[in-house]
Length: 251
Image 1: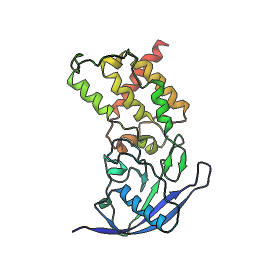
Image 2: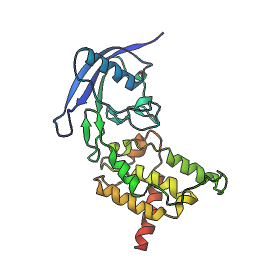
Image 3: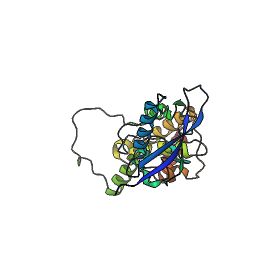
Image 4: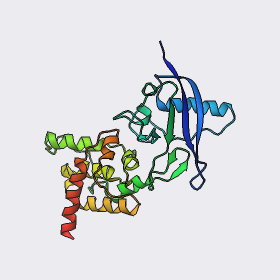
């Protein structure tokens, strides 16, 4: 038998980037515990539209935990109280009947609010443009096993590559640092032969762009790794720092 709950949703509403925002509380009844968090927001928006009110703006795309678009701060946690899941994978069974759920946009200076719960995350794109690539001539696709790579290196590179660029690390960090994101992108390439050649230059370029865009620095509190929906390891930050030091020693 389907279980339902009645909840209050306290949502951050902000008309635009320069507008003054405020929390608005809405009542929702008979929400299925099998529904996802975004489906709950869909129900709320249908209720608002039916009452001729402005629906809540929030980001979403794949709803499968792949794209990183569903960036919501829920009850003081990026992506909500569950672990190793994105907001779209969070289900209402994690909340209690009668509970008040607080929903905010990402808290980060580098992610300005566009409207309501939607933030501008182009800063991550700019960091990737600074060095998140390999400089190679394109052409025919080589065989997957043409370059021998150890299983350990391949596994670590794949773990780093699982980063979806959602921004939870920067939102969770008290310094607003994007170090875990940058480290994941540096590591996934530095661990492989194709990316190892430019590893030090890449680390310096991407960290320089991160600083330029207003992100804070890392003080190893570990909040980023604790809140990461893809369990990106802090060891990637250590690897990136090693590559950065190599480049600084060459300067």
